[in-house]
Image 1 (tube, rainbow, N blue to C red):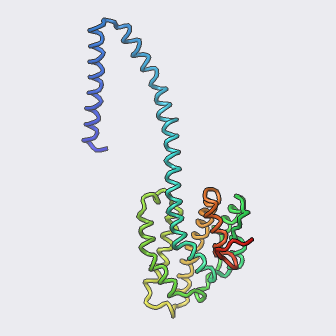
Image 2 (cartoon, rainbow, N blue to C red):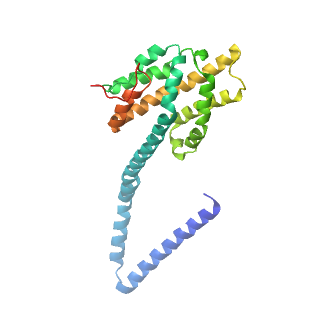
Image 3 (cartoon, rainbow, N blue to C red):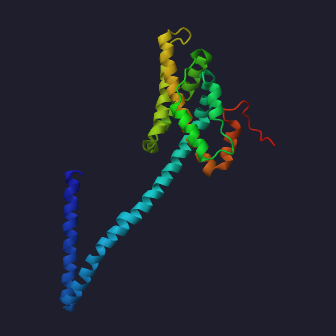
Length: 249
C-alpha cells in the first residue's frame, strides 16, 4: 500500500468516526437519553467479534471454497484443450521410442472399470518411471513439425493467468516447449552426436513423464465429472493395441 492510499484510508476512518459522533450528539440533543445511547453502543460493540467471526472466518471461507472450485473447473477446461490438441497425440507419438513401451501400455491402459486406487497406482508408476529413450525410433522431423505447429497454442496456454495456480501443469507446458526449442535450434536432426542424442532423449523423457502423470489426473477427473468424455478416452487413448472410437459390444 503506497503513501497516498494510507493517507486516504486514515482520512476516511477519521471522517467516519466524526460522522458517528455527530449522529450520537444529535440523538442526545433531541432525546436527552444517554442511557439509551450507551446501551445500544455497548450492544453493537459486543456484536462486533461475532460479526468478525461470521464474515471473516465462515462466510469468507465458503466464498474461498467456491472460488477454488470455479478456478479448478477453468483449469480443467484448459488442461482438456491441451490434451485434445497436443498432449494425447504426443503420448502416442513418443510411446514407440520408450524402451519400456510394453510395460507402460500395461500400467497405463485405463479401463472403464478403473477406481481411485488404480489411478493412484498408475500415477505412482508414471512419476517414478526411468527408462531409456531410443531417438532412432522417432521421426524427428515430423515431431519437430508437429511441435512447431502447436507452439502458439502452448504459448497462449502459458499466458492464461489461471495457470499461475497450477505449477505441475505449467511445468509440463515448459517441458514440452523446451523439446520443441531444442529440435528447432538444430539445422539437421539426421546426424547427431551420441552426446547430443542423449541430451535430447533426456528432454523427451522429462516431458513424457510429466505428460503421463498429468494425463492420468485429467482422465480421473473426467471419470468423476464427465463420464461421456471418459468413455471416449477409454476407447481412444494410445496405451492400448487398437484404439478406436467404435463402441464394442
